[in-house]
Amino acid sequence: MAEVYPLVEPYEHGMLDIGDGNRVYWESCGNPAGKPALVLHGGPGSGAGPFWRRLFDPAAYRIVLFDQRGCGRSTPDAADPRTSLATNTTWHLIADIELLRQHLGIAEWLVLGGSWGVTLALAYAEQHPGRVSELVLFSVTNTTRREVEWVTRDMGRIFPEEWARFRDAVPEGERDGSLVEAYARMLTDPDPAVRERAAREWCRWEDVHVSTHPGHQPDPRYEDPHFRLRFARLVTHYWRHAGFLEDGALLRDAGKLAGIPGVLVHGRLDISGPPDVAWRLAQVWPDAELVLIGEEGHGLSGDATTEAVLAATDRFRPVRVP
Image (cartoon, rainbow, N blue to C red; front, side, top):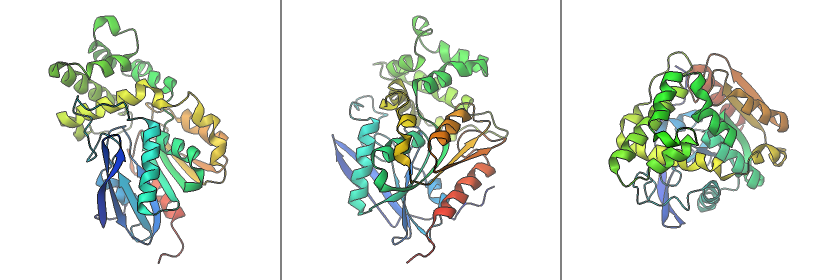
């Protein structure tokens, strides 16, 4: 087990009114006078769990977590089919981050993100480079249409039996088209049984395509029907729109990251998020260091990946803390 920092409790938290009928939950942990650091969770829809706090030295950092629109403790809940996702886009999330920064009186912060949180962190940093001191990113994604097609269709070549089940959960006439579109439609079906089946099969496939590293354990959150529906609905919403980003825009605009130090941590066995995504980003972002971890996959799937992320946050912590 990687030696993460002890779990600390928030010293302040709240619900920020971000407009459009939305309120996001946020919390601050660690040292109130420490270096500000923002966590961007994955999913979309996973929420910011307590483990994220343990990736920073709590004596050195002012650690800020928040649940993105529609998930975790934020309201309204995307698990409720009556909750509109019309104002839940990457651009809304970027605006939310800026509102939160201003609310907390922070001039700039280190931004840490994983998986979908990497896409969001890059989009935010390219829009507001003056507000980002460093980037620590693991399981690098850009949420391009090619990446979505890879996860929802091409990965069937690696897990053919499991993918066939994933495909066959949608109506026969839709199986040769966009599977993410089909699932997004089923997740808003008037019949709760259709919604539940779609959420269950989507999350079952999510657990499969990240299972390429030794010792993989199923994600226990998928046992919760409420979490399944919220997570599947938000993931399919963002994926069907390719992250609401122009295809290739994050790489094209990586020059805006010039002067921002970054660390990219990626597992060589991360087949659901192939390492070439991280490698291509490192080629166009000269201030980034790429750390490829052998024998580990997606997320903080092993000690070496976790230790590399910890090493990055330790490297960027301030020399002196008030």
